[in-house]
Length: 284
Ligand SMILES: C[S@@+](CC[C@H](N)C(=O)[O-])C[C@H]1O[C@@H](n2cnc3c(N)ncnc32)[C@H](O)[C@@H]1O
Image (cartoon, rainbow, N blue to C red; front, side):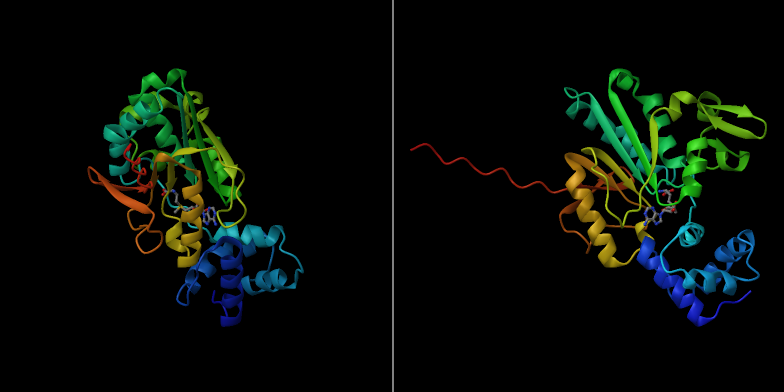
């Protein structure tokens, strides 16, 4: 199946406007492999017929949203990249827990959470290593643009292949139960995570003050201006002691000078630079 230049241009404009996804020339195969099956499921004779129908609609509707959903890259795994989670366990969480001891509250946002492995990894790490949080208010908010991945995440059921990727065997035994050929996240873990739809380039709901923001392997698909806007918005929600986690191929450098990269072990995380406290005038 091929795609005409006109159809590809239409899809890439739509994807950019609705999700910020940048589809440059050369990514035609991606549109064909992701929208081809959608065309079939929707009963169109061809990909061209699906795109023709989308073009005919006067308003963005469910068909366009299902196409955007199908175009998203949802690759994820438990404890992805390992080092950020080690940094959390070894130094960042002990530091945050000391800072938050009087409020006894910890709020984490996993933005672009895909099928849930990232927020569930965070929840399991907290349960496993920080039992003192049992009487704290801990919230892990997990959001994504795609209703398809949110459904999988909410169900919390994973195949053998998925649990083999990144999840230590001891966690599998402790935090999952086997149902048929699926591994199901136990309620103890599930109840710590709240999943909600959120498109990062649309208006955000009022966010609570955040201790940790994970926004990994999503801005890599966006253009520079979109990355700048999102990083700036995150700054307004991040608590002064908070940390931002990006994917290993992502950075704030040349995008937002107010973030400062900080190495924690083999992980690089980001903090917002705080203004220097003003020096009190010497008493005369
Ligand atoms: C590659 S996954 C990353 C998952 C996880 N953060 C990780 O690093 O393993 C990227 C996710 O970003 C979501 N996404 C893409 N564009 C988005 C947007 N504009 N707003 C919110 N989520 C978006 C996709 O649906 C997809 O689930």
